[in-house]
Length: 234
Image 1 (cartoon, rainbow, N blue to C red):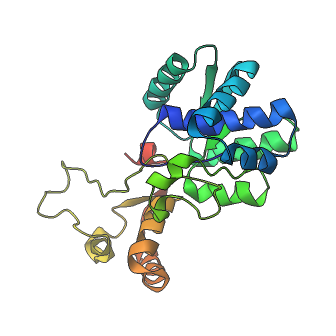
Image 2: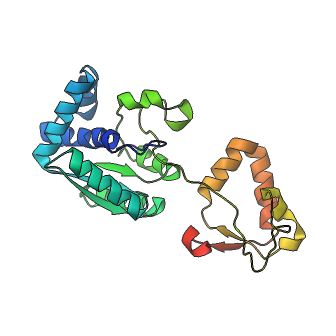
Image 3: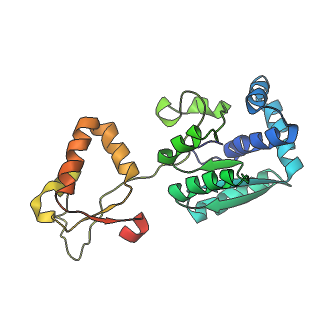
């Protein structure tokens, strides 16, 4: 299972998906299959993966992607790979990760490829549910968009932004930076998600750990309204 970012490539995702079909079809150790695939040319690799996927007839994809994007992916995938159905289930990153862990405990692990969101990926790696696959396409991605050992490659961007109610706040008054929320005038009058993972990761990347912790401690003192889910917040 792997994640991709940056390019939403149906063909690329098909390669990573089909790999797991090879594993179940041939009954070999995944690492052994990946090493074998690595010795093939691009064309030979593609033929091998497509043949294994067609033998099973379907691919199961769990992801934290919008429904309209998933439908575009499904249509393109099934057009490219005749005879292989793409079955999809979508949910938040947390729900996707929890579903995978729950199914595994119940002895029913249906997903061939998953995209739960970066913040939930380590839990799947720790549970031993993520396999390595060094796709040739990884060479096109910068180091910040893939892990060094081949367990995941990012496939989509999510932007964390500040939004405000234009009926209550004028453009001149609107916060320009995250630090603006430390102003006492916003006390109790702004909201934050219960799990602001992407924002926190952005702060850590930009500010570092010490400043991020200092900011969050100050932010809490300004009484943000905590809600679960970006859709609800919006």
